[in-house]
Image 1 (cartoon, helix red, strand yellow):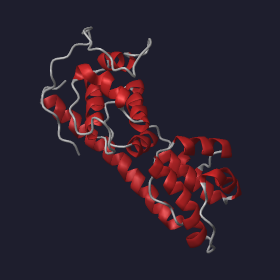
Image 2 (tube, helix red, strand yellow; image 1 turned 180 degrees about the horizontal axis):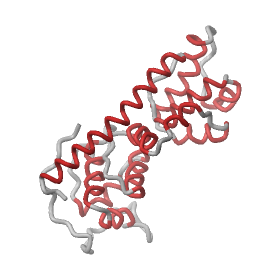
Image 3 (cartoon, rainbow, N blue to C red; image 1 turned 180 degrees about the vertical axis):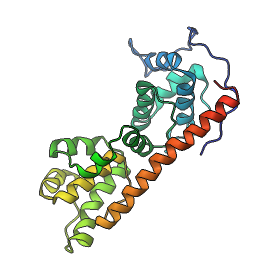
Image 4 (spheres, one colour; image 1 turned 60 degrees about the horizontal axis):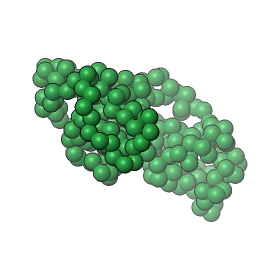
Length: 231
């Protein structure tokens, strides 16, 4: 769990003196995230800065305390999964930091009361393929390996590894339970293959604990931040 940062540097939402945007940022939306950051409440700004610093995957500013006036530069350099998470924090006005896409997905399911839906619902084939294509590589690998492991350990048969090109056909031909399992992997950002029903139950419990832990620790952390005079 990241430690509470020291007192933030003075920063005003009225500040309009921006550094030049990096070359990749152009057009009317070049400063969109910077403006969103400035207009957010301080706990939300803190969540954005903390997420950037403690994101678990490698990226240009991993472990760096990004200066507040350079938020747009860092956002433009962020990988797709981090960028989606930062957008989620801003759009939902959430005072929560995340260390991975799985963190964000699990917490969102817990926060919105959609855990049971994710555990009992299979995506349509079209939606499954779309979600798979937008997932990060470890999640995609877990989905593909689950098809193999489920066939062997749950159905007691061997199949050839499922290539991505045949994913839609494999999903359409899978039993109902397996379709729910791989849909759940995508919904939660889970990165461990699920090999049978018992493992699925254990992993569901882990995700529930992860959601509760995330919320509880943020309540404590924000209380400490307020005591420190951060906001």
